[in-house]
Structures are given as structure tokens and as C-alpha cells.
Image 1 (cartoon, rainbow, N blue to C red):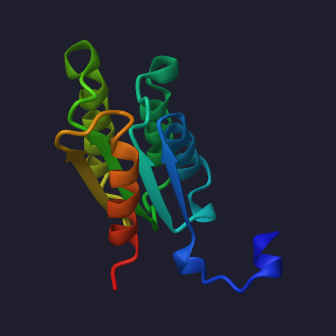
Image 2: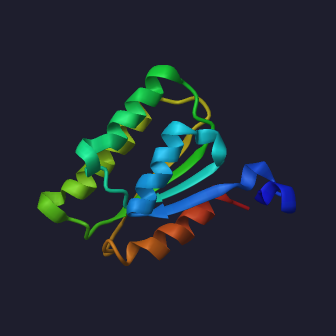
Length: 135
């Protein structure tokens, strides 16, 4: 609908999601990555639904070796529930993606010092935009 009413550069189409919005953005990345060129995924609950994101990524890799996207994956350092389980799960997702060495993928993973689950969202958004849309 937007493409019909506005002139859009396809290489500039991106999505931002935080928390369960980040889970949704990651879901799209592994189900229909062509919908967006850039993904800013902030603090997704990787643990949700028995670590479904890890399974979706593994399933995607079993059928695809390319991922022509820019992905900015981030979390706050103070999101340390259950002995850093939230952070460790995000790192596991990032490491799995990196280990698959997708052709065409740019992945940037950041842990923002001093940020909580709530305070990290604007930091992730602004840093993600700068990563996706470098001048």
C-alpha cells in the first residue's frame, strides 16, 4: 500500500522492533527477509516459546545460504535477569547467525552499557539507524 502511494527506495526500507516487537522483527527476518532491507532488533526475548528464534534461524539456514540484509541486534547490559540469561540468549542468536556466514549479510551486535530493557530502546533505534543508513 505504501509503495503505491509514495515513491520508496527499496534499499531504504527497514523495520525497528523492541522487546516483543524485536521478536516480531526477527521472525520476519527468518520467514520473509525480503520484506525489509534493514532490521533493527532491540532486546528480543530469545527465550520465548522454547527459544523459537534459534529454531527459526536454524530452519532458515537449512534452506538458504544468503541473507541480503543489514541487521542491527542489540540489548542493554542491565537486562540481566536470571544470571544474564536474556543477554546470553541474544549472544547465542548472534553467534548462530555469524557462524552460518550468510552471503550478503551485514550483522552488527551491540550490548549497550548502563541501559535497561526500557532505556535501551531509543539508544538502539538511533544507533541502528546510523548503522543501516550510513552517509
